[in-house]
Image (cartoon, rainbow, N blue to C red; front, side, top):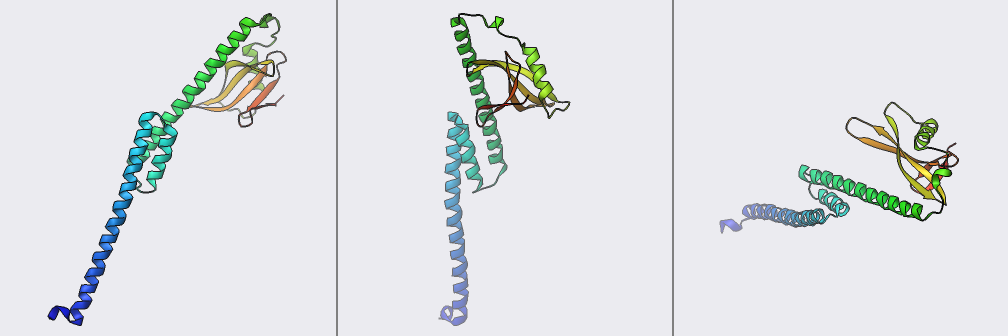
Length: 195
């Protein structure tokens, strides 16, 4: 009965406590690894299905469970794919607008060339003249024509051209008849006069 003495009982209690701690920690890690792996599988399936926004959100949630570089790379890839998708959607929307305008122009009984007094080049010059935050990398480019409230506008993109990328600084509308320049507020979809 040596193992039942007070001295050995304390040792057994300490060993049992340590063993229970290891079992508890192992169960905790097993549970969180299961959640982590499910999130990774879910995010990967979102990537395969082209749902990049959901993939980014799911990868970021997985980062809460385990912070590793593979997840960060996956988030970066998903964000790049998301940006590409948004750009493609914007391009498709622009093409649809051009097709719509061409149809409207064919149905029109008069020629717009008789009414226009501002050229595309002049619209770009006017925008450059009134744009306030210029630097040596700032570029102005005609993008497309748009009709708002029965008025025809040239849409000018202002961007900073860097070595490896370009960053859009804003969109400006120039009235084809009057030459008045407006800044396009994307949030409210309003034209704000600047001249």
